[in-house]
View 1: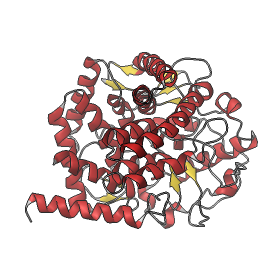
View 2 (view 1 turned 180 degrees about the horizontal axis):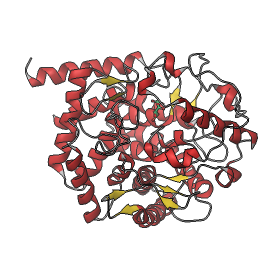
View 3 (view 1 turned 180 degrees about the vertical axis):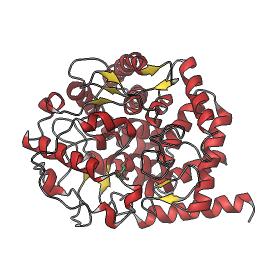
View 4 (view 1 turned 135 degrees about the vertical axis):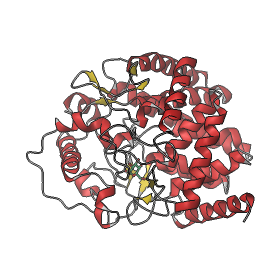
Length: 427
Ligand code: GLC
């Protein structure tokens, strides 16, 4: 097959993955391991769905936002239909919602995705209607973030559970997670290990602490006005904050186009304030951004991809150039870009989830930022590395950056959505 035919066949397989995981008004990340609707998966998947069916793409986001909490939070999982194959299920979270959801959130890519859908819409009437409704809800979510996760007005929001980051078991959380106690932990049985290899997943010690935090927040009635201060785990993630900053800027743009100057103005201000504060997370020695442990009051010495994702925001030129340089350096120790942790660090683990493996959604976000900053050659390297992984190993959840082996779950929806984007960008 020539390369056009290879891409054509990959694209068709991607469409098929989206179809298999489509549940009508939402998509599951993959059946078995993740049988519900995940927040940032859905938003990124809608970008892929737009290539097939615009109305379906808007419906994906709309369904997610139908489950926004009264306080403005958009939960990390919506449990549309019961499924015993996943732990912790609704009974553990016990958030009291009619259609159950978890009580924590996930990276706010919704603003970014909404502008992208709007920009490329062919059905402009539908886009105007859907975007106008979503805009108001996304603005409320952003407001929720700054009020509840940055109660002291620093400009940066903290995560109160590693799962909120979307990078569940990153090295970034190790020190802060060690501080989380395990006394009073109710007995439980993991279900993820029935679907994926234990070597590819978080450890038992990490899992205990994930569950302890859930129990702790539940005992506080999921009252977000107290959870931040009451959590022993409070970490400021530069990647997460940059996604929020970019989404603020993107919905400011969307709001201006839809004549909502009020929403535009406050999101512009949020983005500017956040961008300024992001600078406090820059590490001169590592030449990338780092997490800040708000409880331990120090920057976390961990060269993870969380410190490179900020290129998605409108960084000063010297910072985006330094991030590009870092990625170029990483390509000397990893065959496939972009490893989720620096392979030269002793804590790197090429197959363990967010402690080394490459993820296509991260590649997409980073490539988008690098493109805007003008680093086109690097973007092309990231995109072709991503497509090589698919060609070699199929639509996996994540990949070993040294060997390209598929890891975690298979037939993964957001991986497929990103493939559709990479192929369309290359065309
Ligand atoms: C894992 C990932 C998270 C993702 C979820 C569903 O928990 O770490 O980022 O949203 O799976 O795919």
